[in-house]
Length: 115
Length: 111
Image (cartoon, rainbow over all chains, first blue to last red; front, side):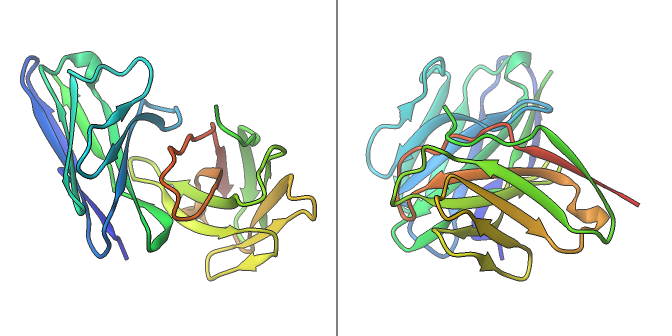
C-alpha cells in the first residue's frame, strides 16, 4: 500500500498566488524527502533535498525563494510555490527515505496549473 | 547525471514477456539496482530491487549480470496495464543521497 501521501493531487490557481503541496510519510519516519518536478514527456527532475530540522538543499537552477521547502517533522514536508506563474505549471512529486525503508516510495504527485 | 542508460522505447505484445535492459557500468559495490515504473500522471511505483542475485516477486523478475554492469527487468506476461515508463536506478538502501532519474524506457504493450 501507499506509504507516502501527497496532497493535493491537482490544483489550479491564478498567476501571482502561492500554492502549498504536502508530502507525508504514513508509517515510517522520513529523515529525508526529495522534491521533483516533471514536465510532459520528460523524466523527473530533482529540485531539492529536504532533511528534517535543517534547510533544504536545492539543485542548481532552482530558486530557493520561489520554491520554499519546510521539513518540520519526520513525517511531513511541504513545498510552497510562491507567486506562481504559468511557467511553474508542472507535475510535482515527492519521495521519502528513512532508516527503516529501503524501497524509497513516492507520492502520487500534484498537477499544478497556473492560469 | 544519472548513472544508468536505458533504451528510449520498446514495444511488447500482450501476453508475451517484456525484457527491459539497463546499463549501469559505473555501479559501486554497495549500490543496489532498483526498478520503478510511472504510469501517466502518477508517481513512480516500486517494482523490484537487487544487489547481485536474481530476484523475483509478484510483479517481475530482475536479472543482474555477474559483473553487475547491466540488468534486465522481466515482466513475464505483459498486459495493457503494464504500459508505462520504466526507470532503472542505482542507489544504496537507506541512504539519503539525492536520487537522479535517467530518461527511462517507455514500454508500449499492444493487443
